[in-house]
Length: 130
Image (cartoon, rainbow, N blue to C red):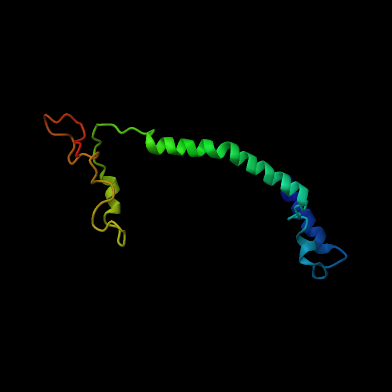
């Protein structure tokens, strides 16, 4: 509330001041609301770039190594259990102009059961096709 009050008082002062709003430049009118950032010197910019490069050289190889590890060994495991079909996602099936056409986007994977509850004697495991 204080900032709103200060802004309103400042705007009233600007509007009723001895200099009219028409005689002020846009920069003078808005400088109180949008202060200019100080310009960095070349030395400060060079120091900041040096910090960024050092950070990249230290953390870049770690990130690249974790990415290669994830691609080679894989951190995610999939369950062998079937999941129930989810008809609420079939809304995507009927959306016109979608790249998957008349096929649904999620239903035709080996992890989604064709029918639920599972038929008698089904162990609930995913059928692996090799």
